[in-house]
Length: 163
Image (cartoon, rainbow, N blue to C red; front, side):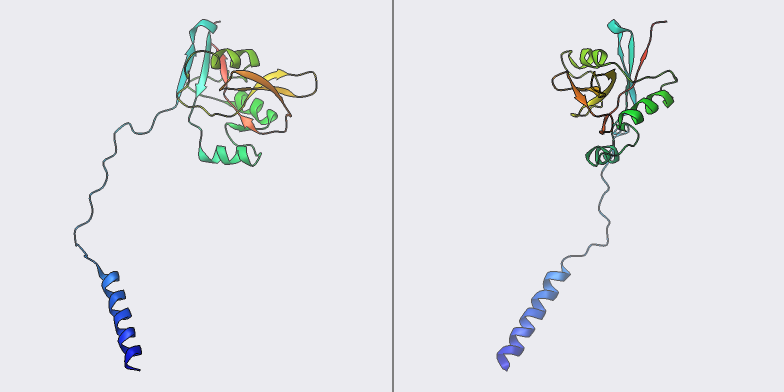
């Protein structure tokens, strides 16, 4: 009985010691955040092709939509991609469109990453295949692949700069 009471006291005492710790009335200093820590949305000008590319950050919600085959903002089905670009009002312009597979292959085939914001996933193109599918372009190899239009892929819109 004495051993049980002593053990209980030791356990209770050690619990109180571990839970207590040193409590300081001072608050910890906040981390200083740089003024320009968040990158603004941008454009990429491909001067040799007379094209202006949308260069916006991709969100976690868009990554989740991609993995669940849903459509939201810059991720979705082929129809969603076309509608997204047609309705896009960005950087003061409203004449955006879905790029062709050749345009996507060209911009991703250049040395280095042209865009500030990118995804290592397929991007829709407006180029149809002969089998009721559309081409997507994979940025890592700048190659095009056939995809079902109901599939979810990333979207990057483009517009012509030459009139």
